[in-house]
Image 1 (tube, rainbow, N blue to C red):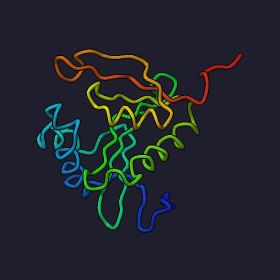
Image 2 (cartoon, rainbow, N blue to C red):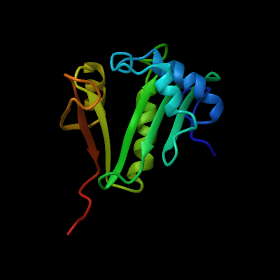
Image 3 (cartoon, helix red, strand yellow):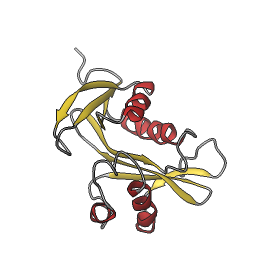
Image 4 (cartoon, rainbow, N blue to C red):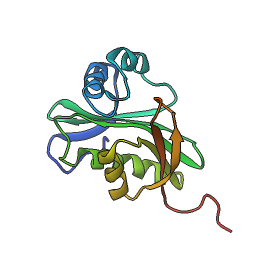
Length: 163
């Protein structure tokens, strides 16, 4: 059974090869990816074939792919959210929160931590993650492009080991 959203005609499912063009279109038209210099060619390489060894999900609404999430399991006693993107035409409607909540439910069922990164200039994303309960751990300067940092974020359900 596929998880569904409370919104009619909306669901989260595993990404399929036929979703590739819609996902690339979302990411090439979205910040911070445009500002970071990622092009359709870059995204085509990332999604051809679909990412291996990762959980890759799309959020679909009204027959359209509206969001993408990629998760790498087993990262620092938890999982790492490598990518979360929502179509610019669908932002502000709760889809990002819904997709993130789905990822969190899967992660916290098996591990105590979920990590993500956000660009230091991306104030909207920083506020979004803060609202979802993520804490900024620290910056990684010059990680993707010169002069800017990616900030490591963490949301936790508790320590990895209890005494």
